[in-house]
Amino acid sequence: MSEISLVKSSILLSSAHLGVWGQLFWLVVFVLPLCLWHITSDVYGYFRYGAPTGQIWYVFSKLFGLYGALLIWYQAFSTLLKNTCYSSTFPSWTLLRHRYLGGLTLLVITCHIAFFVTAVSLREETFAWNLLLPDFRDFYHTAITIGLIGFAMALMAVFVATLRGRFPNIWKVLHRAMLAVVTLGLVHGFLIGTETRYGLFEIFYCSLMVTFLGAAWLRWREARGRVLL
Image (cartoon, rainbow, N blue to C red; front, top):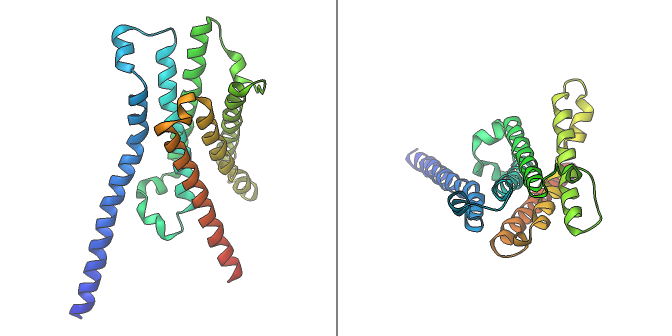
């Protein structure tokens, strides 16, 4: 009996140890966008010495964009792995509050778009409504359009989720469109800024893409294993 108790105690201690390290890991992950933004944006200098018209709106739009990318990645990443052995590494409140976290994600992305449009409008001294329309005339506008398509799909997925009681069979299929939203959002974030394709930003976005694809593969492998059984 003493040996069994010792084994159980060691398991509990290792689980608690893993939980602490897991919490520290996710704390670092969620603080990382703020650190990247601070390194590449002289916000203090802008407020103290002044900034070009619309620049402050632009840099805060970038901050919302970084957190928008991280949050949509986390929503998909944690959902894909929630029924696997890796689920114990996620903060429990995020798995239990999936809808609230989804609402926060949508709010952050909306702020990203609103701040960006405001920044461009202030610079051009006219409302930049054209940024809210599909435009594939060049690389820059194509990157913006990719993000807009992802945002429109996110709105559709959230709207369908609110009506899941009326359409139980349809909402799950349409809500899975969020996987496409994650892909479009990360591609948009990687393409839209020149600094995002180099250095720390490149590592940040590539890490999100690779881990997202890895989680999707693990989910597919698990589903395929259940079918074969």
